[in-house]
Length: 265
Length: 317
Image (cartoon, rainbow over the protein chains, first blue to last red):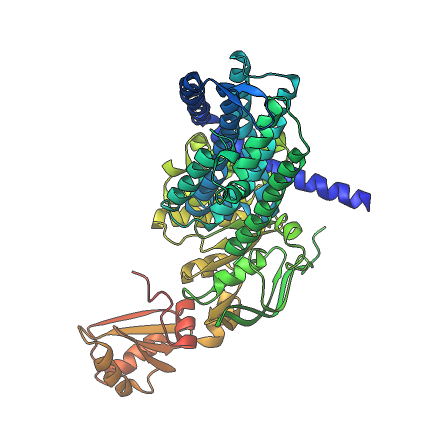
């Protein structure tokens, strides 16, 4: 049994790896796009962290500890960078490959299955999101925004954010019909960025709005990354991780189902 | 070891419906190793749907289908590993160069990098695209893209190559280049399955073929057999100046008895006969005076016309 499971896992890895290889070869001439994403996040950090941060000064959290506003906002912007990098790769690029360039039509004539395609796209999104995260964390460290060794865990924490949005992005890519649909996605993403606990603690919102924030995937990502980078681990983090993982798996499952339905006519 | 008469594809009462619409309505056929097998029919006859089912990218909704003695419903991936597919719209990867298209595609079959690069170079040579290997796909002409798609389909040394209308949309010169490459493949003993609505293509390339119409197979055999069975050896085409559909239909009875059968078309009348010279003489004796007369050998086009009462490529410009 374990032999079968092992060879099945190996076949899946190999197949999704060949999808990853395709994306690497297709995108290696376009690394400038990835760089631009990193720069965008850094601009946010400078504008909100150092600009607004200088005005706000320190912030007292619910548990009584005091942190600089910049150290408070930076992890949230990091979480946002992870989200944006991955959404750009999955929702937008996968949509283009699926509906416009018909890349998957050719691929499904090979032994690859929709699940392999979805998995390969997730690997790739993780790599692309990972470059954003790594660049950003280095900058945070350079500005002394990482307070403890716990903060190194912010990197793997971002991987969970990337996973969740890879799943969401893949699903969205299969639902989108026109480029105009991206405006809807951007509106929702921007709302999450503004109100997902990026700039203020959720407790500051009116009580009717709080459940909406708790449902936001980005909120869970921000809480996870912020808690770790401020060196305040808590059991709630397990819930955040579970929520993000569920979104990843659910999203991938829906996406591969819809790919199958659209391509295996 | 290839076995004599080894069956690669076997379909029994194969069906496919999309909701209410039945695209394939129960077809039976067998494709043997080493042969070039053709599906001939007008657009919408169910050819491409049948191809997609054999290619394991479309699930049959009825009947049985076996490819390499396996069930496409459950063993699609392992069947696809042994197929080479050239889809109607090529589906080349527009973000990759010509060479990368082949190497990356090889990766999908689990072919290692070194072997893939060697194979890709060999295949580019075969389809005469080596000088273009660093170009983007969009820079290639339609004929070159089709040749690249053919090269791509051979990357895994497939047991069966499936080509869906391989020369549709190509100019005559490009068509001949594609035919020539396909003929080479045939010479090498590669099993080929193709769909077409071009008679000359089917006659040149196919050892055996089936004629499809409205989701059914209406005739099967070698091109020669089909012609011998369904039409006479020769055909005399008569044109009467500007005379059209109705006028021609009225003229037709006057010709009764001169050939085996009279077929009035919108722009001409066909007289099926085993001896065109005799028939032409008989027409003259009757005082029939067409503006032009053309005697020719019967083709698959005539077979299709006889079987369906319609010209095959009537909807084509």
